[in-house]
Length: 304
Ligand SMILES: C[S@@+](CC[C@H](N)C(=O)[O-])C[C@H]1O[C@@H](n2cnc3c(N)ncnc32)[C@H](O)[C@@H]1O
Image (tube, rainbow, N blue to C red; front, side, top):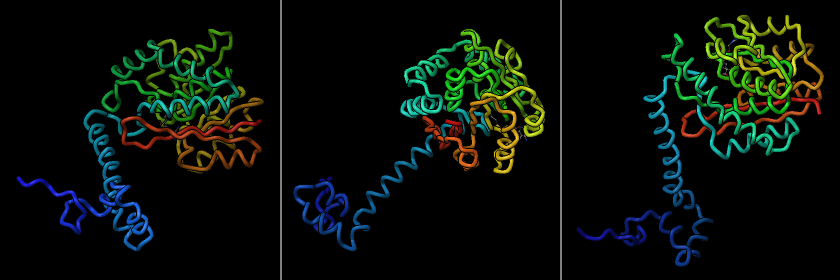
């Protein structure tokens, strides 16, 4: 076999123009500068750009293929967040709850170490009638932030609209139970229109602090008889429904209440509502680890 020539293409080498020019800074700096100012610049860099986007797309395709054979989920996907994203989440929670970031990191470590909650979710999933549509592996994603927020703010009443299996509700309940151990009892009202929702919070100690309501979320918010300290929208994600939930819950909020949305990467409803009502607003965006889904986020609005 003849050795493969590596010179520039115009000398019979196998290397692309772009790769040749950009791989030899000493030999080609003048040519590179001239090329980068010429009409040929896009052509010269095309192979490098194509390789970069193909590498990225190949990673997404590999993650998608892995997920298709290993996961059973068909919506409301679960995944872990990257370590960097978890740290950004800690800073986000610290900002909206006005607590030092090491305190938030301790809360995140606390739920990560909660083996009882993890085991309960695993066994309730295994026992559920709809287990064929759920993964046994427990991955909280942005719900870690919900946990830390409830730990930091010690609310007496949390309302979550949209329960699905009850993963978020279980996480909120775990935080409420820890707060109770520290002398700050509370309850979670969790609302879903689907009577099959919430199977993760029908048993175990977590169920003792959860009131599951099977009804439309707006109708339920209208009939609330206790002030709400933390409100989380995670039900029908249409703009109209999300907006209706925030306007309906307004008159039921306790002083200093915190508004959260799970829909922040899809609609500007909460940021617009915050501006209209003189609240502050911040958004956190998820970075899932090893998953094809680009992630959701947490939107938060509160009075300074
Ligand atoms: C994204 S899931 C909730 C996810 C859940 N919070 C979690 O942490 O995994 C959305 C849920 O909203 C419920 N939903 C849709 N429209 C609703 C409505 N008008 N009122 C109450 N729940 C509703 C659906 O039945 C579904 O279970």
